[in-house]
Image 1: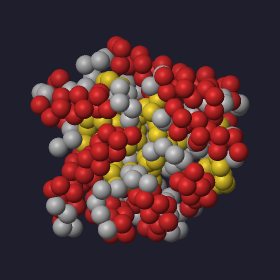
Image 2: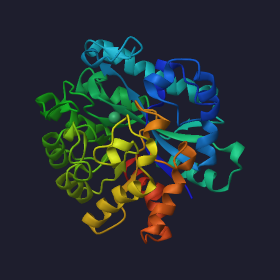
Image 3: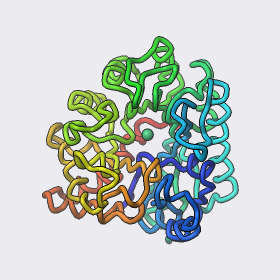
Length: 362
Ligand SMILES: [Zn+2]
C-alpha cells in the first residue's frame, strides 16, 4: 500500500532547528534530548527511515515563514517584516529542497509532473526499502513570498506545485487568527495561479475566502491539512477548520481534504496539558468518517498530518509514534466497516488520483 501525507513542514524544521530528516526520528529525538527544541516544537515524528518503513512514498512538503507580528520567541527565526524579506525566506526554503534532492537523490526527490508521480508509485511498489526515495510535492504555505502575482511562474519553474494564499493573513487573503476575505490582489493571484497551473490549497483561508476561492478559481483545489469544524465546535480559532459547506463545495470541485493529526483538531476541548492518549485512532477514523458520511462517498479525504508543524509526539493520538505508523489508521477504519479499497484511498489513493489529474503532464 502506498501512503501519501498532504502536509509536512520539512524546510521550516531544518532551517529553524537544524533537523536532519535523513536520519531516523528516534535518532533525532536522542540528539535533541538535551536541547530546548522539544519544548518549542515537540519530539519529531519524521525521518527518512520512518517514511520508508511506513510506506510513505509521497509527501506535500512546505515552504513556510511567519509574519513578524506572529513571532513567538527568539528561536522563531523564520519571520519576515515585508514582502521582500518574505521572498528571501521562501527562496531559502526552496533552496533547501533543491540541495536535499541534489545531495541525497537516493533518499528524496521532487515530484514535478504526472510522469514523475507514476515513476515514484511504481518504484515504491517493487523496490527494496533501502532503495526508496521519498517523493516531495512542494507546497508554499502563505503567499507573502510571492512579491506580485506576475512572479508566480518563477515559483512554478522552481518546482512549487501547490500554493496556499494565507497562513496568518497575507496581502492576498485573511487567514488563521486573522480571518477575512480574499483581497483584490488575492483575486489576481488566483487568476495567475490558474494560468500557470498551480494547485490551490485553501487550508488556512477563512470561510468567506474559501467559499469565494472555490467559486472563482479555475484550477485544481485541495485542503492540505484541516479538520471538520463540526467535530471541534469549541475551537478557539474556528476559521482554522472546515465548515460543512466548504467540505461539500470542495468535493463538488473534485478536491481532496487532508485530515490533520494533531489532537486538538480531532477531539473537541483537548488541551496540550492533557495526556496525548486521551485521543486515539478511533477519533482519526471519526474525522474521516464524518466527511465520508456527509458526502456519501469515500474518495475526497486523505491524510494531512502536519507532523512537526508546531507540535510533536506529545500532541498526536495514541498509536501514532512516528510517521511510520500512519498505516495503522487503516485498522480503525476497518473497525468502522470500511473496505480495503476505501482504506487504501484514505491512506494514499485519493491523493494519488488527485495528483494524477492536477499535476502538469511533464
Ligand atoms: Zn498550516
